[in-house]
Image (cartoon, rainbow, N blue to C red; front, side):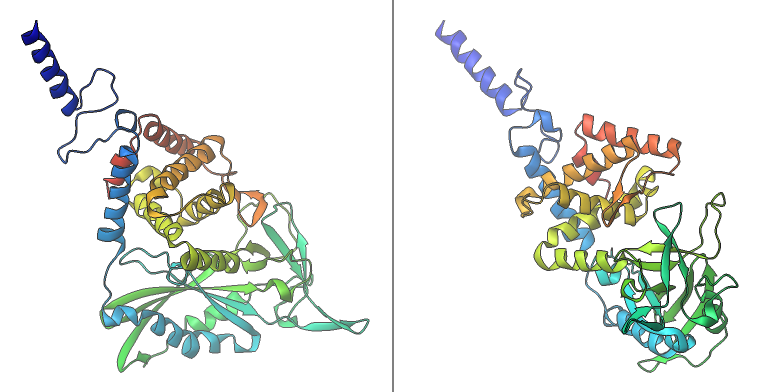
Length: 377
């Protein structure tokens, strides 16, 4: 009897150590000795392994040392802005803002986005002794778009609506200009125009970078703006009648301020956003959405759970929550923009594509494949 009990005890210990206890609480460790499926791991162990994967990506993929020339790229952008871009519309200029991932601290290694917002100067008129803007934003049938009545007289059409001045900017920027240089080295500038942006493709020494330039109106320079800037962009819905050129509501300055606040106080929010951008480049299903979509998902995650912890131990929970928010948004075809709750970002997206993404994310959630998802980076 004693011999049988000893053999049985030894067998239970052996089974326990090898992670195959009949309760299913433990799974057989992988080759690193770590569990991979949440339901099969002891409490806290799954998050620990998930946390290690997040740290691996942060340390091996997101962190990279920059050469001296790479560190100077923002200076190159500033130099070209001052010497080439601003003179093209000096008569119309009110202000300029530097946007894009490089200024949001959300870039990935080897990728830098530089966006220049060129704000038009809007004349003021006097009414009852007060200065008011000569430009008034008018709502359209689409909550994300506006028409602008009034503004600089040279940019008004026959009905008095404001154009974006893009054609004037393109004439200047697309003209050939030689002998551009920075820090003693030539800057080769190629120019192109597509949609609302005029793009400058720069090569300086061994560095290549693109600058997208768009014409904008500041919220404080126009009446009825609702506190939001406007950016001159073509309106794609031909079914909506219009009397002039449309301007789209812009949230860039507000988004930039919020992301910089995250970077200053809760940098792991920025880390999580960058990890999602890295995943987007690895999976065809996630590539369907631009980074702007994931930015608004991050805003929603923070907004929905403002008291959530963002310490290193809690980052796995925040990552899984973000995946679930994306899955729910895609499944319901609903994600309202953080700075404009009237606009559903997914309203007019391809339903077939959304279904593919939804099914992809549902499988990850249902089978707890978060770790495997990260291991593709």
